Image (cartoon, rainbow, N blue to C red; front, side, top):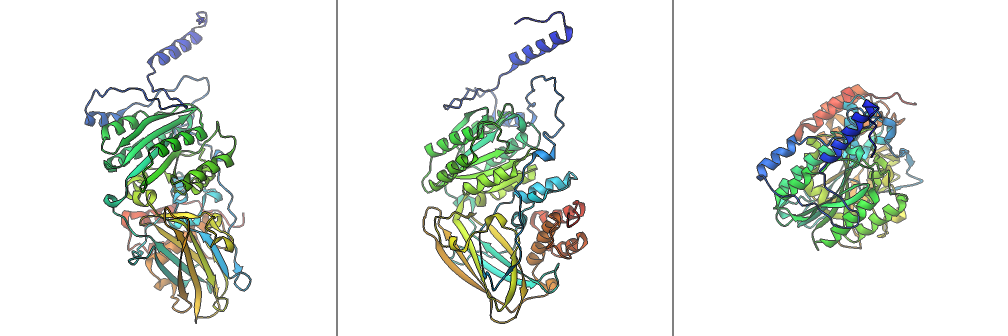
Amino acid sequence: MKIPSSDPKRLSLVLLMLALAACSQGPVYQSNGYYLEAWAPTRSASAAHKSLKSRPKPMAAPSMAPAPPVGGYTKPEAESYAKIRENEFVRTAERPVSTFGADVDTASYANLRRMIRDGDEVPQGAVRLEEMLNYFPYDYPQPAPGEPFAVKMETAECPWKPGDRLLKIALRTRDVAPAARPPANLVFLVDVSGSMEAENKLPLVRKGLLMLAETLRPQDRISMVTYAGESGLVLPSTSGDRKFAIRRAIGRLSAGGSTNGGEGIELAYRIAGDNFIRGGVNRVILATDGDFNVGVTDGKELERLISAKAKNGVFLSVLGFGMGNLKDDTLETLADKGNGNYAYIDTREEAEKVLVADASGTLLTVAKDVKLQLEWNGSAARRYRLLGYENRVMAGEDFANDRKDSGDMGAGQRVTVLYQYEPATDSGTLATLRIRHKLPEASRSELSSHTCPAAGTRAFADATPDFRFASAVAAFGMALRASPHAGGATRESILEWAQGALADDPGGLRREFVGLVKKARIPERGR
């Protein structure tokens, strides 16, 4: 290498690059094998754990281009969201049956919370009402013995449209204590590409993984695969009681390189298959900002791979991180195809909620391909509208088609559904709810049926706190979307409805919601 001694600036730059190259000691990754660099345990577990917190960030190679701003890629136009076409009102006489799949994802709410806190306007495509509704815990009863779900239906006046009413449908699966959960075979697929350098991306992934590691039992197993240009195994399948080895592997994760998501997913599924636990929890968990910019030339092929693996019992969950280049539409699609959940993690508290507090629900599937079908009585309701679930709506004939995939529910999870309808009478049956689901390893679905009477509708002020709070959340989502169906839902009225329903507020999530409504940039309607 010829050193340009005549140019002091270039000479300094070259010497700096050589020094950095000599100091580099990161692990080497291979895409075609299980290569793992040997790391000698020279310190105690407690000392190693402390070092993870103080470990310096990897130094980037010098560049003539200006450094990106703190927080990574901050251009909002680089984020991508699927376009949402709102469900419209349907005349009951013309189409009395409404069919859709369950959805327990929560990513939309956590993501828009991040935007509101940063003072940004929320893109309409980022607002999915069902994920906002299902983010919050509600006081729903446990299922009766022998029943797959607890089902409760409630009607009250619609607060944003005088004369209309709301029907709230609540589903809940049975809780499973962490100690009673079957053994888990977890494979984390971690994006360590250059776009993950920001503090709210890979460093937050590491914090979440460290919290999860503390909850693993000896019968659980965890592996870690990384991808950045090439893919490699940085932690082979390891029992949950080997905490030090797990923490050490987590501490070695560092960002750099381009992204080859497809290749990493193939390796992760291979590891999951090699360590498959029959009757256990077998799941690949993808942690990324979704910026699949190298190696994935056919998105449909990737979706087919994930769908096929899900049919073989290895499900996929997706954790989205960061801002500026979040590929929300890609991540939601991958989770849907993989019979898994999609969550967005923006803070350490959210990481703990997703990976620790809600772990039984997000990891242990108890009801697969859950479909709901509501048949309205035309004599009791003139028209109706489903709030949210736009990308879960399906044709009526798909309800009984067991080859048609749908959403899954984990242990103790809740699904909340709101319909707005125009009443015609207060006698007889308002609607009949039918639910189909499969047991996790079954191929044929089971059917249950429930009815809701037309009588018994309450004034909105007399509805349960859960009903009133869920209504406020839905109204806020419609306001953020600048929906023409939002009626009289203003910032002031949404705050009034939510603040009147704060009685049962575990973790302060409802009070946090009130703060977001106060701060949000609500667009004008009709834009």
